[in-house]
Length: 120
Image 1 (cartoon, rainbow, N blue to C red):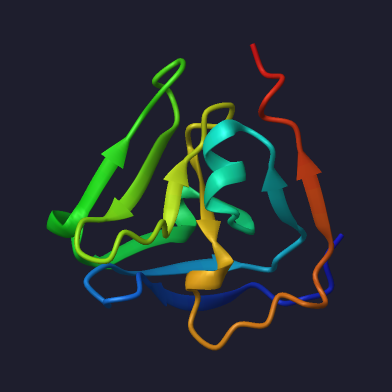
Image 2 (cartoon, rainbow, N blue to C red):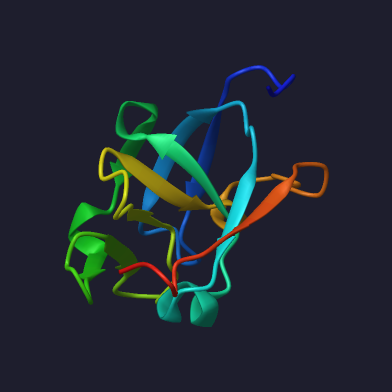
């Protein structure tokens, strides 16, 4: 169980076209070994859709789906940065790239490696 209080964090893509907020206590961060996550090398926090708010830039987002077409990975059309994705196994949750959060240091949060490559 996390000892961090639930707090709101702001984030964006590199060019600031896509802005969002999340509320989380950061129980853990995850990496994934599936073909897309391995290539984008993101460090993610899982948040329920009710704890995520897109502030601006919906028109700047491009979506990418593959394999089962359940997960949806979002990228900024301008700068190409991946800020978040809708998860495959828990589609009411998003994986948020913590490197897109403003003034956030992930160094003291446990990281769990997830297996995406072996998912059927």
